[in-house]
Image (cartoon, rainbow, N blue to C red; front, top):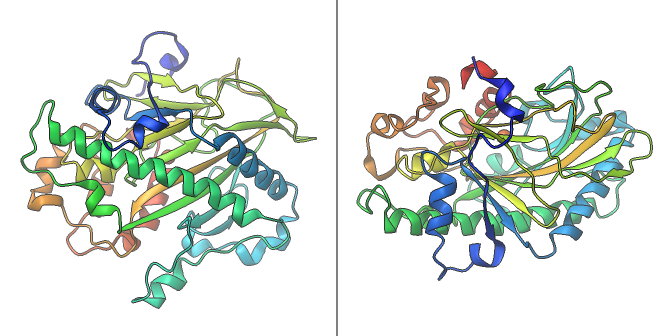
Length: 363
Ligand SMILES: [Fe+2]
């Protein structure tokens, strides 16, 4: 049983590591210290990126989209609801993920909206984006956020490469460049999330999503915004409801600013770093003293994935079992999907359903 009572105690856990955006994207910078503290076996598996140019303005654009959607007539958006590819494209009405405290989402793929699979029109069509027709500039505001996030995510892969190559507890032997592997083989999938208001806030309730790890390479999150249910006025607070955990089950609430991004490592980073970059368990958790009452929580997550046609084979011809021994949170359901020849599109829907349905006890 997870020690949920510990979540909101102060000063018991590792601090969240921060790095400036300009340093993150500088290929010549030595970022090994920050990467080690954030992603080694005792780290939180996440890092906060500070001083991100244009982020405040882009974030406001995201919130304008969120406001437009929650005040829209959802019955008119039925054509954009795609249950067969839930979590991946189109509108997700409130109540699907968590019936008690609903969350709505608008999902999209590929921030540049390029044709990724010209050789496979069926795959291209299956994951086609759609956009709400009645909200001006929706797509542009949506994609602006995704494009900025991908820049940070690609830069983090380069930092992982430099960290693994230089070696702390391990050597370069048996590793290969994650950036080179995925720079032309990725699919960035975005979820614009609208958590619906809670009238009576208790501590340690999940809000829209339970504790889980993401299946992707790197998740990127903007700072959530809280907006009153009636007039959608923003409530200023440093509280985010994002809680991370490390391998010791130490938990920390993450506080970050409007011009900052959180980058979290997912299961694919764990695998393709040969088990050296840990994936972080995380959830959106309420706190009676801090969660604004009767407010929406808006945010925007970008999941940097292998491309849908990427064949999921263990890296470097290593034995997958050997890599998985380094993961104390082994989850047989997910890893059993990791079979030679399986393409990412085949497993991604099942993986998402499994992630979002995972109970606290399972981690
Ligand atoms: Fe997640």
